[in-house]
Length: 348
Ligand code: GTQ
Image (tube, rainbow, N blue to C red):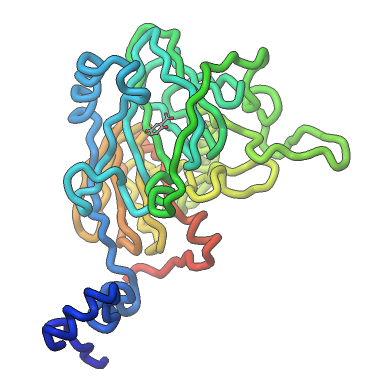
């Protein structure tokens, strides 16, 4: 492969003239923007242990009243992007949010899409365009871009959940903004996961030509997800992956436009070695414990912990203990598929 010319090899007056003209030579930067054969990720894999972050989050509850926070969140910061990075990977933002009993987080809508995975506590809820979604541990609740949402809490203990948004993408696109509004009244009926989409393979019949809701299902209750995983695990061959995707039940598409969510079960003591994927990902452990290696670096996790992986990472997961581990995987594969470059490669 040809050695490309460096910036330093160009005459100083030529470099100065380029700067004055607001131009830059591509060739010294060529391999930065187009590296050979595979991307060179900026993201560094990281483990965010709940035991470390929970006390800081509860302290935030004392230091900052909800009125002064709008959303009381500690963002999971990618160490590859330096202190205070507002993202976990290129596309994925994650934050741990705290709501205390009696609090409400004000209503707003924004261009990025979000999903929440409940980590602990009972009695909180999110209202999305009037649909009141109760929050229980492991539930996945969507707030798609442009849909008004506010959070409330009728329970007795602090509630913590993990937010996942495509916010970094929207910031990059100079497309990120929020619109504030009034707290919503809940619609006088249960959320669609309880009444319209309560069984896989059964959809509400609508008149011909009636519009299908873009986001028919806002809440994926953990009790259902967990039972489905366990049923799959009971028939899966040893070594066969037990993983289910959260999809739009009307279309089968990913539940959000850019981010994908799956639930995984790792049988106790079993090692899973997925292919190398072009998508970046964040894993959240809902139940159990285990160890994952990301390009040879080990992260020991347990329920409530979250960790990130980079694009094309060599991954290995192993559930520890005597119980299976159940995790939720968040990735940006739906965005990459829409851009027609999502790729999987066999492990080296
Ligand atoms: O709960 O609406 O972590 O708007 C970041 C932005 C949560 C939310 C975040 C948000 C929210």
